[in-house]
Image 1 (tube, helix red, strand yellow):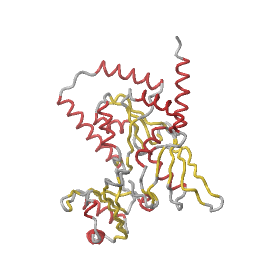
Image 2: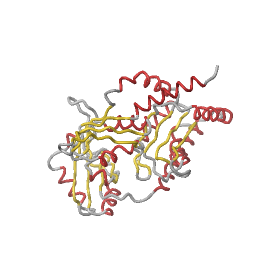
Image 3: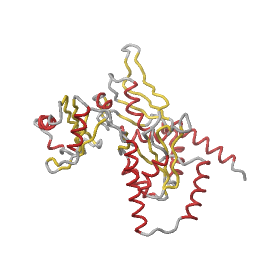
Image 4: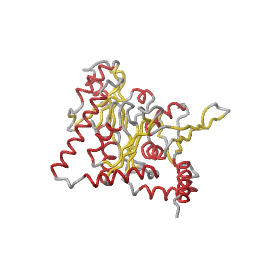
Length: 349
């Protein structure tokens, strides 16, 4: 029996799947926002193929919704998981599947079920100067990697900013997603999620060869060897950070874990401003309550505090001094925040 009809049928299913699942609906968009802002907010999840905003010829404004089409389904899935409910331009946007998605649900279920047989993760927003070896050295801290591939760009030595990693175990993949999503690597926050598509036939063959090689070469590891592997992975992460170490051009510092929602009062903003003037001129202090769920009766909220300085060196001094300090019994995490996101009132980072 030839595999050609099976592969042909699989490709048809895959094409239908991709055509449906690489698309996300974005609603409740502020009428003041333009396409470039939508692109900037959604591009960290993967390359965008197109953005379709419906315009009203009478008002000369869009109708408050858009469709964002990605190159791959994983990018759309990550955007759906991480952007729904995020505040953009002063409004909480709604992100979901297009209304005609149920027509393809059986195909979606079939493909995603196949993907569960592989311990694959999707990694996006990868710094352009990073290589496959760099990414592998960072992610192998969570377990043995069978396969690591960045999507090649326009030239052999450039990638498109995303790739796939397959681990030997499901636990390693889960830990990598939990630990590395929104991890700052070289001034860019990685976006990491599960792969919802199985590898293609070529990748599958390569993986089988790699697996065979690993089985031939690998012997059972002692506990000490496993600990050394973890240390090696963490050390590699530090080396990659050093390789990419360069100043983030931002005048904004974000303070996380500084206060709980119930600690926010009228005097907090003034207290923050007074404390931060030790490092320079403070232009703005914004206290942002970010909802972590859609449950209005019992919302899970985290407080982010943004401090904008007049000069970059002032922000850098504040970040270095405030990071790790204790405030009211809480250990503060201070980081430089993307200036462009802040300027567009996007506090989702």
